[in-house]
Image (cartoon, rainbow, N blue to C red; front, top):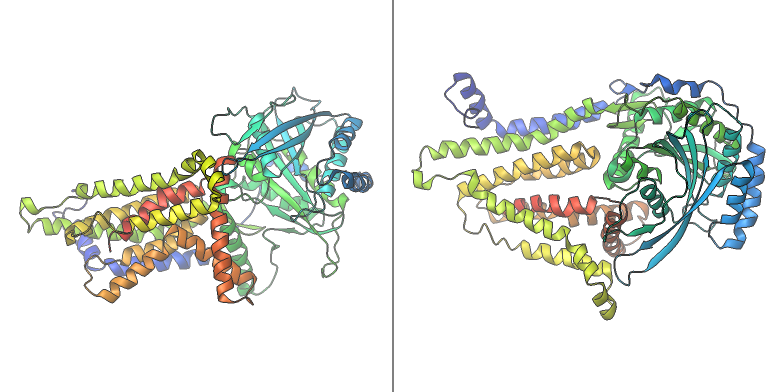
Length: 619
């Protein structure tokens, strides 16, 4: 560091002097260039067209021969009548008999979800799956076709048509002898819980004292799963097929799998959509840019939230490329005259599985890190990371400028008065220690579950008010009272470096969340002054930093959603609705952490909150 910041070299001296004199201008220029460069990437001229990197996927695009649409319709009618007697429970006997009738191995798996908080209720469920053994191999690899079971009373729409389609597809697949991989047909109970139980059992995940799901071992199994398609078909007459790719913690499947689904859907006269948008064909470049911006904005919001958009999202934890095909039911108000029937969807699924069947190795040629402005355009990591780098580099400019000023001031001070960056590390360590304490809070609540029941406290209230109280106590600033200006500069230097480090690492895991946090954190963090003597200016700084608190960010997002979806309500109603939703959302994230491994709560408490605390202690 001393060599880099030395002024002995004339060339280095000019560069560092320019940085000290024009640091604020460089920061503003870099940040603005980052925003404009990302906006430019959305334009059709500057984002690449999708293509196939893996030629082995192409055979599925040749001929589709599925003709079991009438059989699927008959099954759907029979399943509707059968499901009436089961009160939203899976008709196990009917489904297993249908799979056995066409000649498949059928198995069932029981599981129990042990809710970790409150009264610690237990929820029982049972998955059903069938295996079609490949005639051309020895069960060394497998492909999965899955669907969750939902009755007609489900708020997410029934999946009975998808189950009927799955059985019809299984019958058709069994009549072909070109399969080189086993095909597993899975119907999961209790949505994602059943899927998680089945995947854990399939991969022999060891259970421990903190495991929330207790499951049986699988009686039948195959080899490593190479790919998975999840079905959500709500009707026998649909208008389009929605492709869902966002997985747990913002993971994405290999882009080739998405491209195969889009190409096959187009060839079957199905309109493939992504976040409700199809590929725009307008002549006006501005209209195309707006549609691209809407699509990529929806994708980035969905990815930043960190929740899977379908059951496919749990497969990606195990390095299994997967996506969800959701058939959108055709409404009477739809202007499109195109109707997507069982025949179209069956041939789409057939083509995807034939493509996956031809793979000789795992997906390894296309992108896992990308953003999609439409179904036919993509922005690769090599492009969007340039924009992200321009957004995050102002924090490095500011940190380097502060370090240079500290070194220059050291030359005019005595050795006893000199100050080093090492002196502020204990304070930074305590901030991270407090963050780790917040992250462990759910474990304490779990241990005190019996006290919650005895005194009637709700888990969401205990968790929420504990987080809020802990934050308010730490805002009293016990560590940096009476610090000198040089010490605050050093502390700000460390805080800016931590921000750059955290967001840069996060961008490799969830670029959307990293981009969102960078846009709101970096400008405020860089503009905070440690030497301001104006009360009003300090008050404004504190207000902006409070808005950066992870809890406040979550509340503002929920408040904005409430206003967006129901603008007619009064402001007090929106505020109260967002407050109640905020408590539930935090608990949901903790539950997802326990059950599925969602790290959003862990990131917010153990990593983001300590950095916010460091910024607060500068004021």
